[in-house]
Each structure stands twice: as structure tokens, then as C-alpha cells.
Image (cartoon, rainbow, N blue to C red; front, side, top):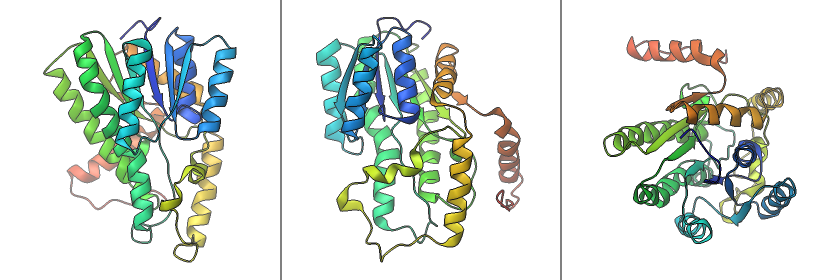
Length: 282
């Protein structure tokens, strides 16, 4: 897809972070933008601010972990605009902790948003886009965490590895069927967002008993390092620039931070050579 004017974009997680950056960039390209987010107050504020800047937007409160919500998102998009050309499965959450100390509620929540949110988006929108028989594109947000493993945030990393595999598989499946629907994987490094505070949107029924889980000193230290890294990261608008450049160039892999490539190469070499990996945090 090289031209965006008057086309329709659907962005999940659109009220903040990378999602808002994608939404604003979509509007700058002349697209009508459907804003989906579980955080309703922030969603409506984003919609008002974008409208004031001249954008055509439709805010739709959406919990991507629930298929009925995502199905309704697709239906309301078609009711409003008749088509959907760009889908960004972007909504994401994270939390710290080891894979065994993380509670089952932790696993359910993070996988519901990061993994099932992408699955639901694909399931609801791909048939629509194929029927349209026009140029369309899907962008699934992963992370550099999809390409490397290291201690901490194992649930988040597991979901992003899965999104990588799903997106690659979707790429091959679509390539064998059509040349009009393309897909990209966004592998972002440090982007200045509030994702470390995503528990503000965690459902009550999936919250932990404070006595059940407590962050260790190591986890606290790692979180502080990560907060500093994100604060110094690129802006969501810069991430969106990478995405739209990748769409125009029909790239499957969109990597926002090329300086990570040597680390990715080490990871791949370890795997190919059956060599136990070193701890990159050591």
C-alpha cells in the first residue's frame, strides 16, 4: 500500500503510546481513523484532540482480549465507512516477574491482550479485507523481545515470540492467495510510552492478591533500568514513521532500532550452533 488518503485505518491501543502515534500518522496521511482502546476516558480525549486537529475519527471502546469486542469493532467500522484498509493490532500490556513466580492471572491477562488480541484482530478483519479485493495491510506489533530472550518479563516475551510466528505464517498464507493484502511485524525497541504502567487497565477479576505476589529487589532494579530506557527511547511518532515507511516498502519486518541487529545475530548463531546462550543482562 503506497497511498493512504481517504482510506480507513483501525488502530487498537490507540489512546496512548505507539497506538496513538499510529493513529495520528494515519490522520496525517488523510485516512479516516477508527480508534480502539480499553481505556475509555483516554480514548475519548484522544478522539477529541485529533478531531480538533482536523482528523476524521471514530472512537470505539474495545477490549481486544474479548472476541465479541473485536468482532463489534469490525462491524462498526464497516457500518461507519464500508471498508477497512489498514489494521494495526497494537494493543499491548506488560509486567515483570519470573515465569514461575508469575501468577496464572498474570498469564491470562497478558496473553489475553498481547496474543489473543492479535488473533482476534486477524480472525475478525482478514475475511473482510479479502472480500474487499482492494489494497489492504495489517501491522502486528511485536517487540525486540520477540527476537531475543533474557531474564524477566517472560509472559510478555512469550506473547511477542508467538506474534512473530503468527505474522510470518500469515505472510506466507496470504502470499499464496492474494497480492492485495499484505502484513508487517513491528519489532520496536525502546519507545517512550507508558506501557510499564499498563496495570492501570488490568481487569479486577485478573488482579493479584497483594499477598500472592511481591516484586523482588532484582525485579525492582530491572524495572527501573527499563523505565530509564523507555524514557530515553524514540517517540511514538518516530515509531509510526518506521511503520508507514515499512508499509510503503511492503516490508514484513519493521525494526525501529537497527543497533539491536548484532544482538539478534548472536541469538541466531547460538541457536544454529546449538550453543547455550549468555545472559545479555550480565
